[in-house]
Length: 111
Length: 113
Image 1 (tube, each protein chain N blue to C red):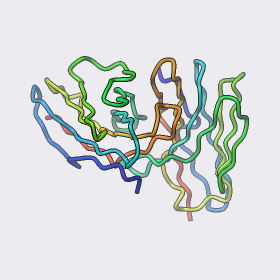
Image 2: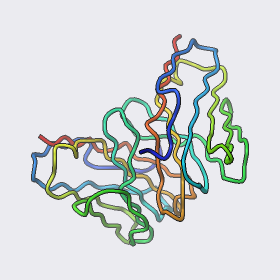
Image 3: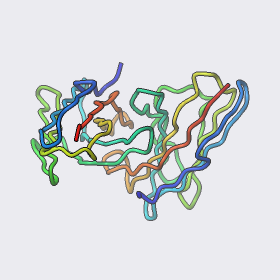
């Protein structure tokens, strides 16, 4: 099973609304990263949060990390139609030497 | 644009054949990771190369193998192709290991008939 699992699987909102996506994982991590993917193309890195951080901001993005609950959330504020994409979290465990992605949340922002 | 390039863009093979996919990492990066992404799923980690040595491997059989060259470009080789190998293959480069941000290429779409 996937280490990182995003929730919800799909999200549809109106432009201007906020979008929140969640990620849960099972084992210990060194850091967690969020990525965006447009329709079967390469992934674009959005934000990295380390295991000793609780919150990080980048423009309209806000990421939180709760290591006690093994969960993270990505908030996109004031969404735009161009934010329509799939969003993935990736958990990084350097001891295991691997990165693990969930199956993503597909976000649709209607103009 | 991340500066990571992959070739070819698309590829069609038949079962049993062998395929080689190529990746050029971003300038200054010494680590390359390969991922397989089936339709509707997230990327699955295949393996990572750091300074020409394999540095971590996911749950893929030995017929998935790789190389990293002195210029840090990389190849993914898949032998005895199976229908389930049809997927988007992504490479990502980074300056260090998984603790660093990974920059992804556009991917190679492999179809196995």
